[in-house]
Length: 517
Image 1 (spheres, rainbow, N blue to C red):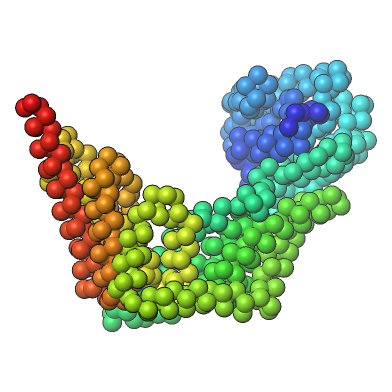
Image 2 (tube, rainbow, N blue to C red):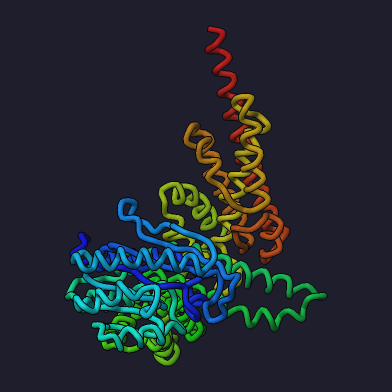
């Protein structure tokens, strides 16, 4: 969006502001600049004194930094650093320059934060008052003095309960409303832009944490952890809701709190309900925030109301009305999967195993497989598809990499395959390392599919469940049958190793013959 208005940012890290984001001036100022750009407002100048501590308790030893706007670089830069008294003297000189820009008509509005209208920032504010510039800002005491000078204050607030982002949005929203500029908060997305696959993958650690606690609680010496595990079972839904909310809006802590409220109230609604509740909370956050800001509510009140209302409305709706439907939807998916596998467990397991590599190579893993893993884990703690992932993908990849060390296609390949092999076996991740061998040799790719299919047949035939994204030994602990799952993992690894070794040996033999000819 091209800028149609200009603004200057003036102030200091202040007292309470220092503890509410003012202690990180680069982030604070950058948030304001980003939201201003989204509203078509360009930063023309800046003067910000960042003290090393809250100015409520300044001392002779207090140091400070002076930040200004570098128009050419379109960024904030630190100009001075030293004792607060010296930095303030330099700030007064810079303030006079900003006052001159105001008098020249190059600045259309002011954004103030804990400014000093009677001292350091007197000239610029007096110039703004003379020209009737719209002013927005925070800092109860300083903004009260600015108003008493006859300034055209269109929005003011304290800093308690606000964040860098919510203050920036409040400033941009107030100025865009005053100038009648279109403004859509930077960071907001439409439902069509939301990436639910990212929500699922980001939430996996929460499911693993629950599974870990449930698994170790089965040990006689740690049976007392059952109570803690029961409490922790609410965590995945909360995490899913938080990440889902952030898919539609990212108003910092406000979005996180709204998502957490919706997720906690969605505990009985299942993971489908948690995702829906989080999306609804994320959709409401910018709308509730703008509703309060446009009506002149203090930023502190707007923050609290936005987090509360945006989380409570969808959360209560799910808690009292929709939880039975969303949990039933999850049950229906699990029951349908159990029914399909029950038709012929070994055959269905074989088919699913054969499909794993083609699906992941085509980019369908996060869209189709990962959601099914989480839906299964919600009921069982572990998952059929999690077992297929660990045995059919991870251990197959490990077998391919092991072959590159045992029968390398060239001498340097042995060292290259060692670390990825360890990551597969030791951490249950980085199967991408085997892609290059499958793409370079169709036999290796076919062997991976066969190995995964064979592992799937064992998994289906023995009704195994486990999970991926963990070390192989933990996958055994997390399975419902450690011996059976060990057989499945070794089957995949051995077959992939055998086929890949044969393929490498054949290639080496062919190259030797070509060289001899």
